[in-house]
Image (cartoon, rainbow, N blue to C red):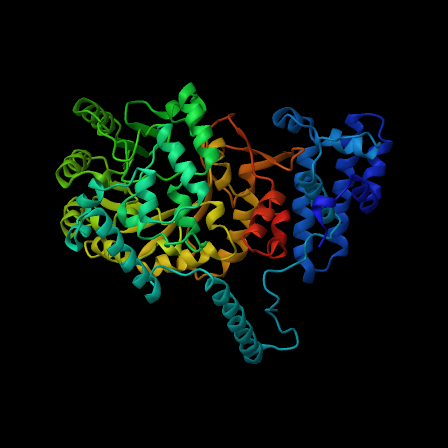
Length: 597
């Protein structure tokens, strides 16, 4: 494999002489655009003539690289992205120094040109053929079945890297951790199973946290800084029991959920001090027609009566609104709740209400029942959806009494009640989570999962292992969200190309019910952009540091007139691969990532 950190402009020009010769001979920038676009189309047409059907993956690679190169050569792409890749190519062709161009930029350009010439990464995920051209009928079927056995054996081996919280040795470890935490906090086993005890003992102080779990020096400093700067922070005793006594890496995803990186604390606290409007990353203020209500789609709205949680996820979409874990005064006023319910009642188009926040299941049963009954009393509402992470952070909250109360609002054929949760990793799945889910299932309440595809859950087959286990637990995979491009959560972000690669290579190997989730990017101001649909975005440019710049189109583009789009910056692929290598991953195992756009 090429060492991209040592990739030079000279190497690029020597590898693709015709491309750069045409750019050098063009008299001006507009001619550079036109002549290179013609060359790109010619290379695409040539590929379809010379490549046999047996090698159609090469044709697809050429097609995709041609599409993105033509898109990036347009002058409109320059104005939207703030950078001209056509100018950069022209300068390189003419030996004009461009010290701004970094190795990740050259890596992107090299792989696009490589793919355009029919030489894209021809690596396959698994070197197991699924065909026997010389056989037909039953012999061919038997041979293919053996190949599929070998393929799945490989999948099993890859998933086995990720240990779940249901493994007997992990269950025993967590019981030891539970007992140690109970002892430290002065509780009893009976109190441990009472969710209210966990709320009373949320860990906020760094010294107390360090007594309950070993912290790295970076983690300790970051949590101390978060508390000093009044950045929301809190961990339930239960969730602390999921962390390994030593930070060995197996619990990396769990720690990353709640222990903020130093740059997160710095950036978030600074923005909160400035009352920076960019913290409202999803531009909810533009889709909030009434206090507590967000409406982005015609038949559903979000209702947020409770603005806090038992613990705070670092990359929470609404971290800018939350004061602290279980902060006093987080429950909206009676007048606000009544006005929001009246607003829903006056809009018969609203068929589904997502009750979230914050986490509504952190409310007591009586308060929650009152809120649910008000919404259920609206005759036009057909579905109540409850967004909660308590199944993972405090599963003892899901008592039979709570599940029974929530289920009482079901009316088969008239009104559905569903729960949407957020399980991030197989290491979070414990017998307590299984019991909580079963409490809902026994009462006819389906449970769905929305995971966020962060760096800490993005290794090969890490999410596949989660989806497979979720189905066995009784949770349906629903959405896999691309991590939002919030500046303070850069450490969590993953290139869109990696999520596409995961969906098309890894998730594709699961049986249908195990891979029913949809990969989406929740675009600020526009809503969900379905990443599998290429027509919903264009790659505009690649910035000097290797960042891809995309233009996303609104969900209603084929439904109603809308000229609004969103231009967003991604994560440099080369830097992502380097971070994976720091974890011990082999970057070559991810090499096809370059040709996902």
